[in-house]
Length: 371
Image 1 (tube, rainbow, N blue to C red):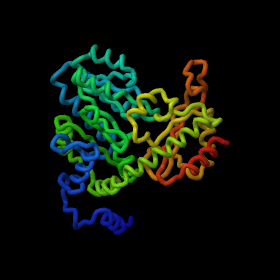
Image 2: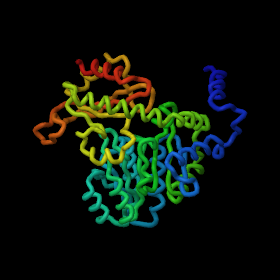
Image 3: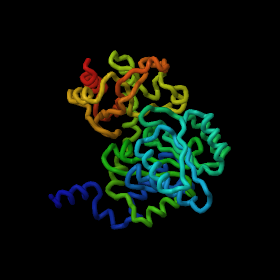
Image 4: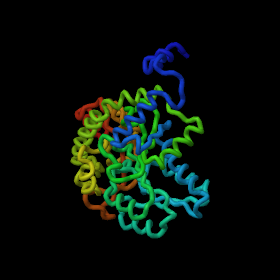
């Protein structure tokens, strides 16, 4: 182990003389909280930010705080959650349902307004949270946020949005009266350079979470804060570039003879396009989802042919990345969802990188598709 090299790297990121030891009042932590609040257009007098060690860590503290704060107040604690969520979020919900007998959650299509109204009326005061992603990972469905805002006023339960898939550069849930936002700072905010997460929101929601994290000795490294702050200066530019390239690639894939279906929020063929296009005037996310007539062994063999695109998870980094989703049936026709048009194959997710050009990505995808 080259200890001196590690010291040199640390000093180059954040000079030691400028960072006196402090776990909770370090200047780059404070500055990052301020910048994130500003990105979402909220004054620190009304909104708080708590920094955590990953996006999942942020979600864990959000769920834990709401459940624990209601254990002695009610016989039932229910969440309404979207039926499409990041896989580890679903695992966490199942974990809490096993851990706390009073807790349960209702999964619902976040675009099904009637189902959300029905659950809200059925369970009333038992509902302690409505939770969804602003744009679902990976198929890109968006709820109608004006509708969610009305539900917030009618039924008085908090709404918290995972905005990782879009970031504040493309969409601001606070414009629709939500109580909180969780984000993985690992993705677009840091450019894939470090692990971090955050919860932003009304002080009555965030302050108890911040206290719990502090009492547990949980603090985001000042070095990571510095990395994220440096990356934030180019966030809008990076997201704009990724968004533009993603739509071009999605349109190209939609016309490709080897592709059965493409799901990208700003394609007219997308199921929630009418809502998406109104809510995303600045562009869509940097990931797209497509269905092909290949299965696992063939996919792995085709991936080995690519020279630019990396076989990897995550998104928001310099490299374009591809991963296999699920081996399941997809729609053969972009617009016909009838059962007889379902075909076997696999779903793939591509995360567009900042360093790769449209032509480089197309060339590699052609290699992958065997064109």
